[in-house]
Amino acid sequence: MTTADPRPLTGEPIALDLLNTRWMQEGEPLDLFAGAFGLSRVEGLAVWLESAGLAGRFRADASTLVHLMTAREALARAVADPADESARALVDAVLEHGRIRATLTAEGPGERAEFDDRTWGPAWTAARNYLELLESAPDRIRKCASETCVLHFHDTSRNGTRRWCSMSACGNRVKASRHYARTRER
Image (cartoon, rainbow, N blue to C red):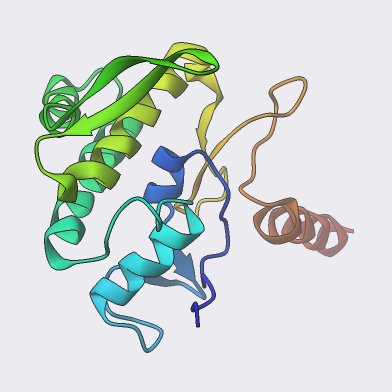
């Protein structure tokens, strides 16, 4: 039986989905990898691997968790300040544990990820995805505009003006508080 992912925002590109394993709920910070929700730390990792579509390729174990938390910290710093050289060095350090091998498949040219240690696989995959996001649309990597939210998303809206991780959560709260403030002024 698979445990449901308790996070408020899932389905983002894997690099941002990894960042979203930490979130705020009712003013309290939560971490899927911290042993909450009746899950051990490794069980939290298993939930994330399943949610991210990586469960069939990688195992949930203590080494994978340590490497993934290393990648999460590197990505958090890189997303927060893309000009931070030390953050870029941390992302590069994660990327050193894997590579892309060109292949020829029945469908034509292909690629396959290879790792010096498979426990680095999910961490490397997330770091690699961050590079892909930077290559395609770096300005679409966003943090929720709510001051009380720490979630990140990839803005896929047509005009690129999405501000909230979720309109039904953070966006609605901000709009409701603005409306309340306006009605109080009257």
